[in-house]
Length: 208
Image (cartoon, rainbow, N blue to C red; front, side):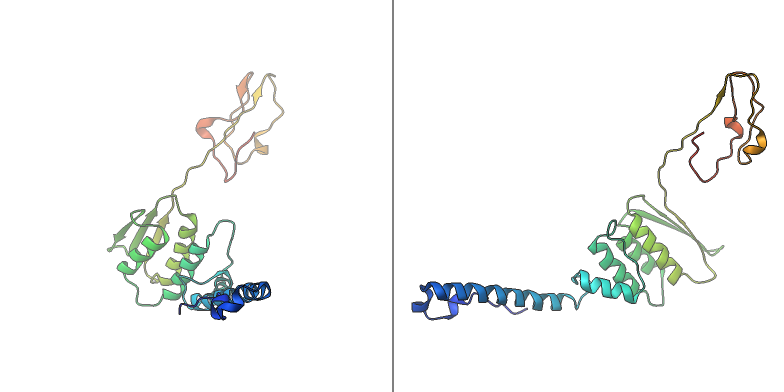
């Protein structure tokens, strides 16, 4: 980008610079020139994925049919994702995969194990970059050969809540068929309805 001084007052003769009307005109035109230079710089920046603004990013995301989530995705990540989509062209190698893992997950934050005999690829990532991991799954689906199985693993921590119902009465009206998902032991005075050793958890939080 060429260096250009937007200050108009420096371009007029010195005997006009002390006149108030000329000073106001110069200030107005200087602001307009500054806005024009910013627009020119934005056009230049939008020629490159690394520097393009939100408007250009949105256009490219529509081209690749990407639905962004501004609440969890930064502009830098969205630029990186677009670069990843553009650069995924065959042939693909393990070196290419390693570079993409460094870009999307982070250097030293992933592990890859290749089982050549069984045509299987195992990938593990540290639980620190969920957006990058989601983009990696899209990448694997694009570049993976059809005869190779991939087992990605993204560990995460969570909390499991278990609860029981104490029955003070010697007789309970809760029948086992009402709890088809759990292993239920017969109710007894002061006992617990569910046996922890035989409890089978569904994919939901247990609150009762």
